[in-house]
Image (cartoon, rainbow, N blue to C red):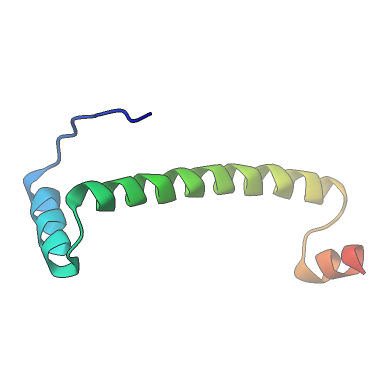
Length: 72
């Protein structure tokens, strides 16, 4: 199922998007879909990383060496 959305951009971003789409031969829609998907992935990853950092600190894992020792 698809959902249609209307998005408004500042003129500069709109121009850059138009230029990039023309340079790459991709549609603006595809570029925006990919960008939003990457942004959402990054937000989820950052949240998970923050959560895991708190847990690791409670376990005394604060450096890469600590991680290596815990895994070996």
